[in-house]
Length: 128
Image (cartoon, rainbow, N blue to C red; front, top):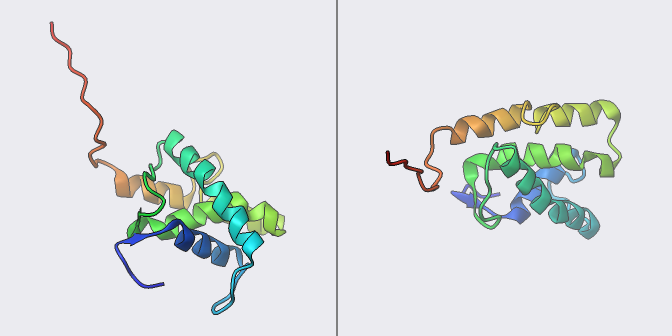
């Protein structure tokens, strides 16, 4: 992959499959593997938003600094489909979202990267 400020969902799926060991350098991705992970992205992004870890507003424009951490989370969430051993699944989960959710290495890293940034939400005011 070329270093760019933004990546796409396809780049994220490719990176997650590489983390899972499904593809090696130079190999092509089986369409069923790609589709399985790609179809789960929306649910994973919603989960990350609900846990207040990070909000991925546009899967076509994922900030470059989030790619590695998001790929670790996606790999952990999809590991059981690819026949990974229980030990490897445990490693992927602890490196990604964590157990309990939000305590994993990647989840904490994403929280730190987005800490203190403007949310764009309207500020509530009270008049007395």
